[in-house]
Amino acid sequence: MKKSSAVIAALVVALIASNGWWLFKVFDAGISATYMEASFDSTATALHQLRAVTAAVLNDKRSKEMLVPIAEKAGRGGASFEKDGVVWVDSIGMRFNSQGTIVEVVQE
Figure 1 (tube, rainbow, N blue to C red):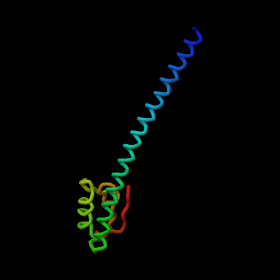
Figure 2: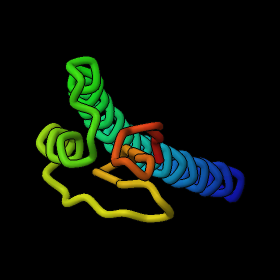
Figure 3: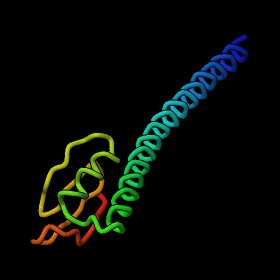
């Protein structure tokens, strides 16, 4: 009787431990999927903005006054801001020279 009780107790502990491990794996997969979706959304927005900005540059719209509204419209609707000489719109940044012409596009 004692031997069977010990075996049953060990099996119960193993079952609880394995269920805990599976629960951890499910939560971990859910969190990873959430981060992956956020990364995908950010990358898709940046790509959409870069396509819009590239099309504008190819059509000789290279000034700060023309490109910033195009990037804002193509993005998630966030307002632009300037930091360290780069105008940021969502996740892309545009550096302009002293004449206001674009010289570089950077990503966060």
